[in-house]
View (spheres, rainbow, N blue to C red):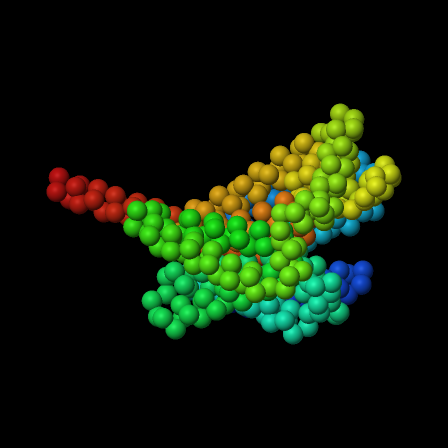
Length: 406
């Protein structure tokens, strides 16, 4: 028993370091990819060395099916070297998710992991404000640490929901004020990035949390209305104080004129590729990681990733792939919703909304919240076992008493 506890402590130690170091995902070290991969290896190794039995929940099982199918697509890929690279990425990310299935976690341990996620948002926003540059009116993270504005916004999702949670639930006025300041800071920085998709994703997370944070709708309906009013006022005040160029960028006319920064054309290309494909390719796809290559080969005027994960998976892995992917996403969201604290549900909601306008196939914040959901599920399964054991012991006790009376 002592050996298992030791391994779990080591696992949590390395995992927390990995989560807090999220900004390293924006540091590229050549062919190896992001620097964060090095830190991801440590918790995976500890989990494998622990010798514990894995407990595979439905979300993890379906993520496994998706990973295996993506790797299988190398066999029929139109660009197998690209598919091999993507397949390896999926396999490594699945290994990280799998590591959580080797342990059971209590409330205290889960709170530490949750705080690590929150601090990853805080560190990222500080780095962006210190190291970021204004390029064409937008705040960009460039240099050694470099990240696209659309993606950087989702790094803040953990901090946004935590600060909102603090505003709603904490009774200490000082902490409530701190939550208000932190939430406004995130929203302000999201506006500064000029990312419309990022803003929509963060706004969705806020809305999801306010709507779902309590099952007792009648008791908290006034609190929900107040929260919506506060968020609406805060966003409008921040928006009104932005530079004119940024305010124009968030207008409906700007979105329509730019075609969502070319996204609509890419979506049309993806749909056309799928419709023009033969039956086999419709069912199995062109191969994972090949969509940009295929657009170039088919002479589309704009060639890039699709900037919509569902369309991208449909083209690369066909009908089978999109079905498996959608089921996996559904089960992760479902398990998050079943948890009493809607922190994870709001964050994964943010990632799903972001995936409609970006390609987040290997996006670390997305996989980090998936990892946290699996850890929550392991905790829930442990509780079910404990409740079942208590019920069995109670029934046995009642039976023994009945026999003794006879």
